Structures are given as C-alpha cells and as structure tokens.
Length: 424
Image (cartoon, rainbow, N blue to C red):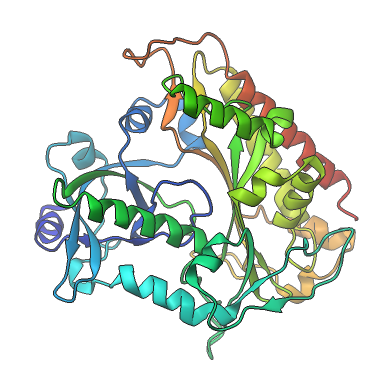
C-alpha cells in the first residue's frame, strides 16, 4: 500500500464480504478486494506460505501478507468484519501491493450479516433441488423441481446438491453470482463464533491470498481433498479416528482423492450447480468419475479443450511433489478453476460463441484446443501441513507425500479416460 492509501485504510478500514466462490472447507474465506481474499491466520499455514519452496510457488495462491480484522457492529446492530493494516508484520508491508484499486473502504459498508441471509431467502425461487445427476451419460432427464418461496434458509444450506438459476439483466452482461449456500454457511458460523467471543477478543489476524477466480466471469470451481490420510500429526485420538473413518468410507482410501465441493455453470439452462462435501463423501468411484464428467460439461458438451491443460498442470505438480522431501500435505485441497462463460473477463482475446460450442466435430475441437483456455490448478489449505523445517513438530517424515501423489496419479488417470472417451 502507498502511504496515502495505507493511512486511508487505517482510518476507514476495508469491509470484508463473503467470498461467493468458496465451495468447500470449513474456514471462513472473505473477499478483501477484486483480486484478493483473506482467511483466519493459522500459524502452521502462515509458516508454510512464508517458507514455501520456490518450485512450489506456481502451484499455490500468491501470499500477500497479514491484516488485523475487527468484529464491529454499526448503529443498526448489523455485524461487520473490518480489516486494518498490521504494521507489526514486515511481510505484510513488503508483500502487500498497492491495494488502492482492490479494496472496499468501510464507507461503502454492506450489512452482510442480515442482508446475505435475507437475500438467499428472497432469492429462493432461483434454487432447485434435483437428486439425479444432470447431463449424466446414463440419465438425460433434466426435470427440475422448483423450491417453494417460503423455503427456509437452513434447508437451502443443508441440501447437498443445488441448482441456482442465474438471472440475466437487460444488458448483455453475464449475470454475477451473489452468494452460494456453502460460503454463506461458513460466513455465518464464523460471525457467530466471533460474536460469542466478542467480550474477550475483538482483534483477529487474517492472511491475504490471491483470489484465484478474479479473472473469470462465471467461475467453475472444483475442490478436491487430496491424499489417503487427512489427520495431522498433532490430531487428538478422537479427531484421528473421525478422519480415518471419513477416508475409509469415501474414495479417499481407494484412490487418494475425494470431492469436497463444486460449482459448475450449465449454459443450456443458465444454472449453476453446487455440490457440497457431504455429497462428495458418499460418492463411489463411478460416482466420482461422473462428478468429474459433470464439472467439465457445459450443459451442451464436454469441454474437451480444458482437459489437456489440466492434465499438463497435474503432471507438473506431481513432478514437483516427487522432488519435495519430507513434506506432508495432510487435509489440503486441490482446486481446478475455469470460466464457464463464453465471454472471458479481463482478457482481450475473443472467445468462441455458444452456438459454435454446440458443434462436436474434430475441426472445432482442434480450434478450441489452440485457444489455450484459462484454467488453473492450485493447492490450497495448509493448516495440517508439516515438513522437517517445522522445528516444533515432534514427527519428522522422510521422502515424498505418497498419499497425495497417489491421489494425483489417479486423478490424472481418470481425466485421461475422460479425454480418451470424450465422444461419449
């Protein structure tokens, strides 16, 4: 931050909003600005980002420092989270770029605590619930059961698979997602915890990270929990048993990866489909493969042009992890992100129109492949990561994280099968 902007932020603070593209995890992820998100600082994760090996940097979000977050109420009693500069952290001053165009000043404060809940209820007619997998190779039924208007917020948040109809405005602009059930659930739980602790504590440290979705008009996000083991070395016996059971009862044990959350835009119906971690845990191997098929499906066709870049990134990541001595990425996730909109945001290159996308012949597929679509593959969530450089850790592991690499290998195999059978 420049001195002038820093002084302004110090005076007004930055209003933190729910990050609407969070599809998994239990930590509350908040929007600091267009290109930056923040989440509660966990010392182990903070240490990971600050001591990250150079070879791993391209596979993780950029770390942008630390802010101090206050829990505040306005005159009307609305709950707000406000971020202020943290002068005591040299990394924050060094690594925070000029956020003058990236942050929302407190003067533009939005009443998220109440507004988000009420907007989801008012918006409930745009949600639908359909237990069957849509665009399934086995089931092409697209019937949708609309929710009654008085549907309760809690029911929306408990649904494991939801469809949300994006409303188009009178302009030709692609509509924006205002909220999703999972991010709202995490946000409200975090606000409630902070409210309960408000008498004892009102200052929290949050880390700033790159917003991996900022370039996309309609981000499609897949959150995969990686590895055959999820508990950290410091887990209690009870926590260890719970995590082992979750792995045994899901695809984590058999293939080293399970679905933790997903949102994908289906252009034929103008709907976003959400799938949460509870649904992901129930998926069998065929169900997991079907969910991956859905993630790369636009509603009109399989997005073949995305598969090769994703596979290339996954293979590069595997090579980097195989060279990563003593690291264990317990309970971390892998994000795959692409733009579901035919009109790419913030990029000058023209995109293919939807009508052209419907064509299935090889010539169009070749043309699409040459476009090098913007698709990102990143590792996130390092609260339980360990390596030999963490001096306070009682357990020091040798060699590679074989559980994580096993998951990557199986993911590569499954996506390769999709690529090879993309005429389905």
